Image (tube, rainbow, N blue to C red; front, side, top):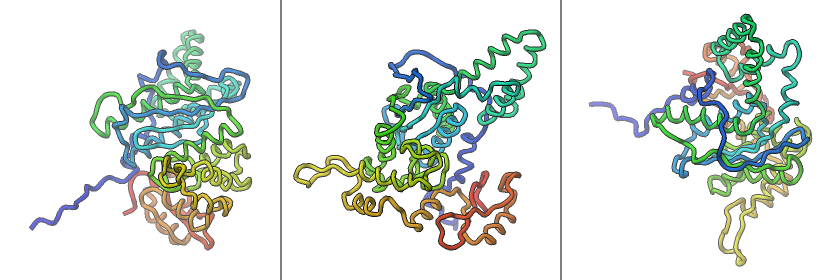
Amino acid sequence: MNPAQPSHPQHPPLEEQLVGVNAKTGLYPAARSWSGGRHRILGKGPLESYCYHVMSRTCGGEVHFDDVEKEALRRVIWRMAEFSGIKVVTYCIMGNHFHLLAEVPHRQTWLQRFDGPHGETKLFDHLSTLYSRAYLGLLRDELSDLRSRGLTILATQRIEAIKKRFCDLSLFVKEIKERFSRWYNKRHSRRGTLWMDRFKSVLVEGKGEPLRTMAAYIDLNPVRAGLVKDPKDYRWCGYAEALSGSRRAQRGLCKALGKPVDGWKSAGAAEAYRCLLHDEGREVRDAQNENVLRPGITPASARAVLAAKGTLTPAELIRLRVRYFTDGLVLGSKAFVEDIFTTQRDHFGPRRKHGAKRIPQSSSPFYSLRQLRLRPLS
């Protein structure tokens, strides 16, 4: 007799499914500027940076992302932000669209990091965040060849063309969508357009009430869609990522609140933002208080959070951190985690020296093991 077949197909571990997203590449042939599309308001004044709310939807809203695809899009967003010099204030990835609040710095000011005698070396170090060693080697050879033939002007133009891709909102979003589309289409053996149009954007004042309100609007999307009752429980938004311990997500929300860049804990940004979400995100009912006109956080939940001044218990914080660890999770004492790390050493990068990472909110010593390269521990 044949053994019973499982009712659900076995999917590869998360990191194996995301290999194409994590891989460094050469230059995409389609990654170039274009014209046309809807009119877009861009900040071109004297400010050091400008903030934008970006939103893009799949074709007809008919393509819906699963959990792996949401995670893939999240990684592409962060990776392109690092490459482009653009800061993510917060974001939310829904089933058929995404929201992104991005801060775009003044290009000429940002590019000063590549000035001076070692500027080109610094530029290549920066390019390595996105491109493979093979591609960068070819680029170096190309520049060396141009200079050896006395075509220094062409070499300079080649470098300037690369720099034009930095601090550009349109190119930033375009490459996010192109890179994700290529991975998504390959995963589903499909062809054709994934996104409905370019993207919509709103120029937002980069401080005060406008920025705080827009950040809260984005992080409250899953609550208003009825997916969760509390934004901390939706993995693919900036607020949940900040609670899970991500410094980059925390710094983005500190920007939204006007707090010091590393003030998530020290300046009370975590509690302040949680209070803001529960104040802004309350459900709206009709005059008779019978029917919900707009889903949101219940009055009882909002009152409880505001009464606690936005503080989460240690148990809640640990649960939020644990929830987002990758495949092959190990939890326990430092000795236990280090022992597993030693026996499974080949699963981790050569630069990693230790396996155990303490969870700060634990009342007793409590450690985790995360960041597996490709597959879960056997």
